[in-house]
Length: 612
Image (cartoon, rainbow, N blue to C red; front, side, top):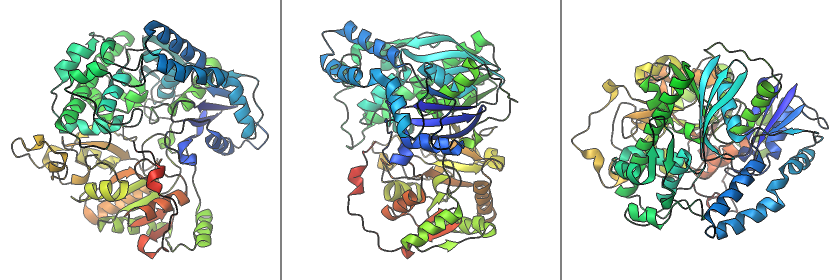
């Protein structure tokens, strides 16, 4: 039996497919359309999933599932507008016509779109709730037979957070917190106020936080958030603009923090650094309170998490170290894209009652390598047709040769295996380099990614070497846990030097013997690489260790700022030629940038990508 899950019409649209309950394929639409956070119907992702599941043209899956209930969302919007009237008129006039002409007709729209994908429209489409889909994406693929499940995000239909319990093949929501009191929207409000883009720039705020001091923590607790011991809380809506306007914060919010919001792309000041640190501290405290409550009322030893807030890997690391649960598992596609997988899983298990197996050790995500792959023959034909220069490596040559290039402080774009599902590059669509290099962070940020210099990079470390470099006692395969770099590897600070007013004064200081992956607070967002899950990437890092003694490399997503992660060899080659990357690896083919024909683009690609 084949079940297709779909998420779309808000942001990060995606499709996923199950075959007899097994996760066979999943991908975000942005990777195919090259439009970051593409909200449209995932035509290309659906076609990919159907092909991967072996469904021929003209035939469809046995069931189609949409990740939320649109009518409940419409009810929330109407009730909110009526509650704040006459305020909110501009927002009402902008939103309601779209709903009346488009979004209220999602079911027929889905059927029509499926027909455009070449498959017959199903008689029935299933519509679980948004947070039910999130919770299912967290629990059902997890290793755990039983677990507490937390979902935290901006908002679904009404829910902004839920606490569930998963047992075997059943998942029950026990408690929920409703709009407008949302941890995700609090974090997004300060993201907006600091000059970053909502639903995209929250990870920048997390990366900026260690540069700041918790100056505004007391202000946030006093004026913005009233949080109880169980983690439930209320926001003081007098300071926020998202109920009755088109902005996240209002003038009263600006008065509380000493002036208007920062304009995007302008200088980041001490205020923004301290605001980032303060809301991060508040977020971590709320998450810890909710987790303690979850452990108390469910009695479960394990925790699963999903929703946009679950991508806050700093909070996740702190939660793990708090020891509230024996272990936690976080869905690697925790945002709305993961809803496509979750809605399919909840129908398979909760609606159809299908059994589930779990061994408390291994998850069902296949390393999150669930997207397309390209074989050597296909790549060779494409390279030859375009006249690109390459060297073909044998399987035996591949890892040693690429490792040697990395050890020479060159930057390599790596495309191998199936594309990752979720926002993290995990060695299949990654840009990699030498973590020992003190210059690599700034080189990658400014000359390759074309992004802010303060942004940290993650280490990919051999799973068996994880504890040699970081203070963590378990794998972190999905880059969703932050942990301290081991103290003996760190270079002590001199006085209060990390509290400089300018970011540029502190970004490039040496902090450890793996400086390119050591953040300003001596932490790192870890991806541990398993030999069985990604054998080729593991072999590459192993060869690098033979050359250097370090079983760790720097890893960032294969894209430039504002662009989705690359999907195809053509996407990867374009990225190579647009940047100061040195080499490109396409499966067994090695391309040196300086050997390639002159690159001439008619369009200004920097104007094509909307900055995040």
